[in-house]
Image 1 (cartoon, rainbow, N blue to C red):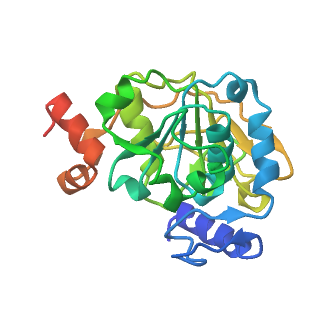
Image 2: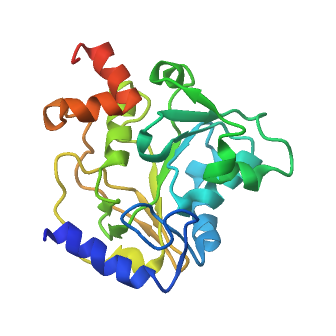
Length: 245
């Protein structure tokens, strides 16, 4: 078993004491990134950042742990892009006026968001402008900003697509919201496709990561199978745009 898989399994064992079960997957953390006790406190730390206060367009992953951040962005009428589960149906956009007052919490849930958001292509997202803040959950994250997702690299793909189109770059603030038990104190070596974060928010603290290397840009097409490209609509769209497929 690889070190990353061992790290995930160790964290998943700890998470059982603080995670909130998913309605579909219960505590099967290989299938989703859970919400957790204290997520509201962790979100407070992100909302206190200048990057949040100045945000005019945000990308937030559909992870359960990001529900409270999505709710606050919706309530603040900040335009929001998120992905469908495993990017299987592409991306969704919530316009500032799309959610009636009082429905923000429902709209932030994965089931509820479908009632207020509209599907958007990469081309349409490009028309919205650059992201001022990107935020993601994680199965685990190291103190030097290396995050472990469910093991499929979806956030890395999302980052690759957005940087290809100039919607994000190395200066774009990237935040992770996790529980304290999900923070790995080791300093880990990152691969060519890993996207380190700038901030790690937990119920107990905010870690500001001092990155020493630039993040990768674009999609590493040679690392993807054709089946992977064809089953993720935005990847398929970008491949056509770039003459890859």
